[in-house]
Length: 323
Image 1: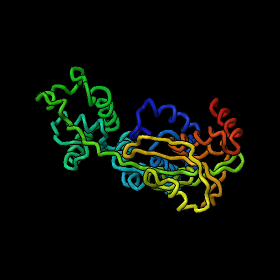
Image 2: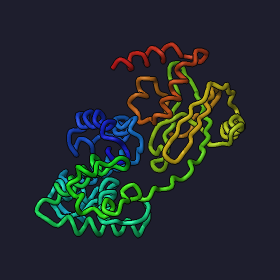
Image 3: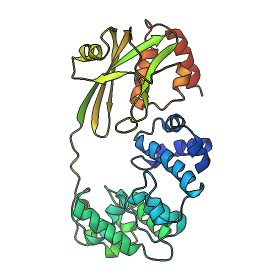
Image 4: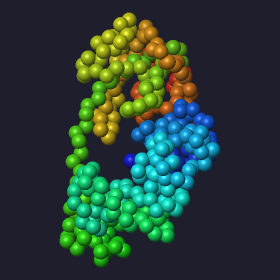
């Protein structure tokens, strides 16, 4: 959960997630819908899908116990080099390195490693340093100390170098280049993603479809829709469903890490449900994995007073908001 997400955001999700899935076996038994619903709002849903697959693999391959073996950990879904290092060193005391953003910054400043975040040669150098340094009696504590040092002292901006226990050895501090190391990463321009979605109603139910299990919003439920160019929403929807009658409800815009997302919402009639689609009530929708952007879309649909069944949906949403 802490990958790409701040601790303050994660804590309530972590608490409720562990209450819902207290051990690996409980997580492995759960459906993907249950896991994605518990993850709702955290984003980067591939993390939840991989976590679920890893739990199933641990049960199937290792009898429900996380393996105390680096190669076996590497074979688990979603276990990249950082995760393997964290689990092997912290949980099992293995002298295995880890490098996250905080550790990379500490090592780059301490040893004067040049280059921007993401540079392949720089990353290899940092991992080799981490591997040399982790050898010792308490590798898990060492790795956690490096992460904590980067998070609280050797910060990206306004680092408190006078409080740093490594200041006498820091190349960046000695050369007056703390602000220059690491070099800033040039963020790629966000790509525009424009969607038209169809809100089909049946009494107090709305039609949802599930995305494929990979890619952006993979495995999540959403209103049926199509990607299109701005201004071509109706044509794009009717190219997919020629018989529909459509009425514009509104727009939802979201800024994602690599996408500028715009969703145009249409109330539709005569839509033939795609394979695998489900008619769900508001209460049932709360049990499914739905992205924050699609939650906002559903909110607009619920607020549409002219749509059939609107009163029932609004009542259900009010009840859920008090929980």
